[in-house]
Length: 415
Length: 214
Picture 1: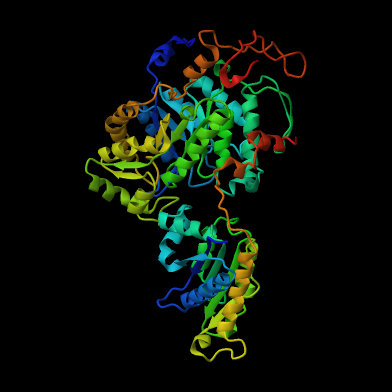
Picture 2: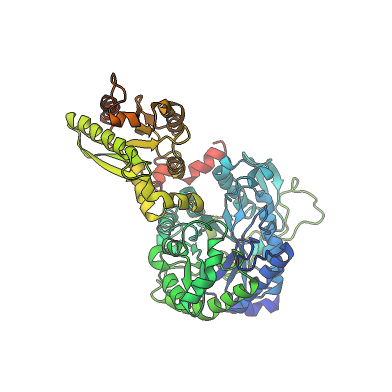
C-alpha cells in the first residue's frame, strides 16, 4: 500500500478499508422541535452538526455527508468550509456531500474547493452531485431551473476536465469561456475526488454516472424502493454498456432513514411527532404508510438490521449506505443516542451480513487510496510543482515542473 | 383490431353520484359505438374519491402511493379518456384538478378525451368550454369537440327537449369512438429505456455533443 508523505497518516491508510462504507447524511435543516416548541439558533445547530459528525467517527462510521442549501431554514451554504473543519477534528472519517449543486455552482469553484478539501483532509474527500430542486435558488445564481438537466451535463463535463487536465480551454453554453485555465490546487496526488451522482427520478443522471464510470447514489428516502431499484438497474446496465465493467461492478450508494429504541413501540411513540411535522413529507402520509412505502424504519435495532440487510436484494451489492438521522427538529442528545445505537448495534451486524456471499468481483467502496493504487500501482504519485513566478498559463508549454505522470489505466485515459 | 382500453375518471363525491352516472353513460355509449366498428374495448373506471387521500399525499411527498400509482398508470396508458367532474364554483372540482396536477404534464399528450360535467343548473354548462377544455389543451390532449353537460333537470326529464341528454351522450361517444378507431393502439413506453430518454440509437455523447454545439 502506498505511504502518504506524512507519517502520522500511515496508520490510517494501512487500516482495513471497509467493503461497504456506512455513514450519515445531513440536510442541515433548522427545524422546530415539535415536542418542546424550541427552534435552535443557526449557531447552535451548526455546532450540533460538528458534534454529530465527530461522534459519527467515534461510533465507528465511515462517512459524513452534508447537504448544500442557500435559504432558511437551512444553514449549509458552504459545505467545504464545514467539512474542512470536521476533517481537522477527525482521523478516519470520509467527508462527502449530499448533494453539491452541479447546476448553480460554477464548476470552476467546485473543482477548486474540493481539491482544497482533498489536500487538507489527506484524501478523505469525495462528493455527491445533484441538481437541486428548490426553484428560487436558480435565479439567485443567475440560472434557470428549466435548464437544470443541461446545466448538470455541461457543468460536470467541465468539472471532470478541470480535475484531469492541467490547462483547460473551454467553451460551453452556460459560463464564460476558459482559455489556458488551470484549476488550483491540482487534485491530491493528481487523483480527482470520487464523484457520486445523486438522483431521485431522472434517468439521464443515471446515464451520466454510467458514462463516466462514476458512482450512482439513490436517495432512497423520499420515494418508494421499487423506483430506486429501477434507476439503479438502469445505471448498472449502462455502466457495463460504456465499458467500465460488469453491471455488478458498478459503484452504488443508497440512502436510508431510521429511528431506533430498544423497544420498537418506544421508537414509534418518540419519533411520531417529528415525523408528522417533518419538512418534505410532514402532514402527509401516516408514519405507518410512509414506513411501508419507503425505507423509513422506526423500531428496534433488530428491525433496522433486518430491513437494511435486505436492501441488496433490491439493489444488488452496493458500496455505500448513508442514513438520515438528524433532521426534523430532533435534539442533539437524541441524535447522539441514535448514533450510539447505529454504530454500536446495527452497523457491525450489517457489515457482517453484507459480507456474506458478496461476490469477489464486486469492488470495495472507493477511497483515495484505492484510486491512487488504481492509477499508479506501486509507482510514486505525481506531485505537481508550479513553475517559478509564472503568473499565467498562456505562455510556455505547461504550468507545472514535473515529469509527466506514467500512462494510467484509470478511466482508460492515456496521457 | 382489439385490445383497446378506455379509462374513466369520475370526480363525483357522493354516492350515488350523478357525476358517476354520467361517466357510466358516456362509457357504455362509447363501448357500443366502438363495438359497431368491431373494436373491443376494456373500460377501467376510477372514482377520485377513493384516491383523495393518496392524491393529497402525492402533492405533499411527490410520489404516488401504490394504489394511486397503479390507477395513474392505467389512466396515462389508456387509448382514450372519459373525464367527468362536478362543476364547483364555476369550474372543475378541486379534487379533479389536484388529480390532473399529479400527472406528468406530458402524460396525456395526444390522448383523445371526452369531457363530461354536471351541475345543478344548465347555466353552468359552458364551464366545459371555458374551464375544462383549456386544461386539456394545455396538456396537449385531444378533447373531442363535443363536451357533455348534464344538469339536474336532464336527469329529471325536464331538460332539453330538442337535444336531450341521451342524444348528447351519443354525439360525444361517437366522436370519441371515431378518435379511438382512427388511431393505432397505444404502446406504453418505458421512461427508463435509453432509446426513450436519449433518442433511439443515441448515447450520452450525443447529449454532451449537442451542448458543445457539435
